[in-house]
Image (cartoon, helix red, strand yellow):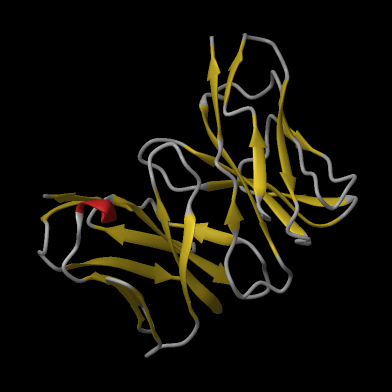
Length: 110
Length: 113
């Protein structure tokens, strides 16, 4: 069965303390890996799409990378406003559907 | 500005009632989706539609129904057959083929009272 696993479930950082979130997947025919940010009580907001191993995307303090079996979301010098739940999703071959992981809840303390 | 509008933001349902959640988009997207989100679980796909007058069941379609009579609209009905409907419901849309991910609405929180 296709699986998307995110770790850790929750991460608490001090402001300025860099770290990484992980998204591992066991799917066949990957046609894209997506990262979203979700604030409490709101819909997810699109961050990045990655398609092939070795690909990297950056946006402000966030950098997403992709290997053949996992993706990392690196957060450099985070600020309290980066606090949110980060969701990872994969698109399978032959489908427009996305399969989501359970997310990582990030808290950045000032 | 283009986007997806979900209404209402909060909805309360009595036992045995059917309720309908609204989802409207003005992005000219072909595909629309309904997901359910529960605490500690990932988003789970209920129904999706890639073209007007056509839709497919997702992973948890039992107890739900949809229609797609217009490109802009994809309402979700939660029927009395859905035994555990309390959840956060998210509507999304995308172009087909999609290279930019989904655009999500702001969600509807449904509570059974």
